[in-house]
Length: 88
Image (cartoon, rainbow, N blue to C red; front, side):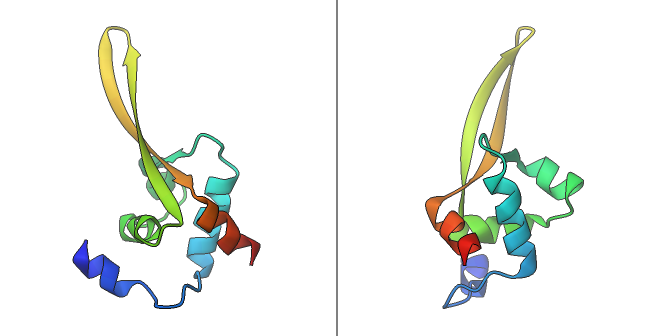
């Protein structure tokens, strides 16, 4: 995480890719599963981690119980700071 933190720009100017990911998260009230963001939309894990480190997104862990099994999923959600960033 230290290496990723050093890659964050001092003054936050989101790239088009960051803006696209934030807009997608803004349209998803419950958030989006990281695998869907990576596989379905082509975002890289490192870029998604940088959104979290920058405070523009957060990760929420949920536990689901289905057919006697328990599954843990993590959803990414946009933060208020992320919403302000895409507003310009």
